[in-house]
Length: 113
Image (tube, rainbow, N blue to C red; front, side, top):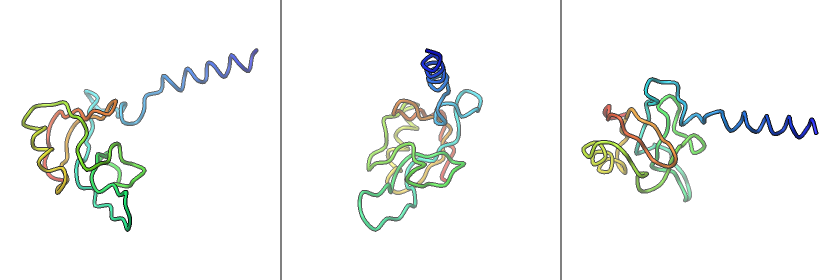
C-alpha cells in the first residue's frame, strides 16, 4: 500500500511540473522562439526543414516544438500571423511568444533570426 501511495504522489508531482515549452520562466510566460527555416539538412525525407524552436537552443530535430511544411495554428495580431505565414518556408523569424497545446502564441515579431 505504501508503494502505491508513493507512486501516486510521485505521478501527481510529475503532472504538476510544467513542460519547458510552457514554463519558460520569463515574464508573461513568453520566451524567444525561432519560427520558419531551420537550416537542418537531411539526405532523406521526412526532414524538418521548417519548424518552431527555442531561440536559446540550436535547431535540431529532437529540439523542435513543431515541424512541418505549414506553420502551426497561431494566436496573435493579424499582422504578425500574416508575416509569419509569408516567411515561414524561406526565412527564420525571431518572435516573443510561447507554444502551448499545439498553438503558437505570438506576442511580438522581433525580426529575422
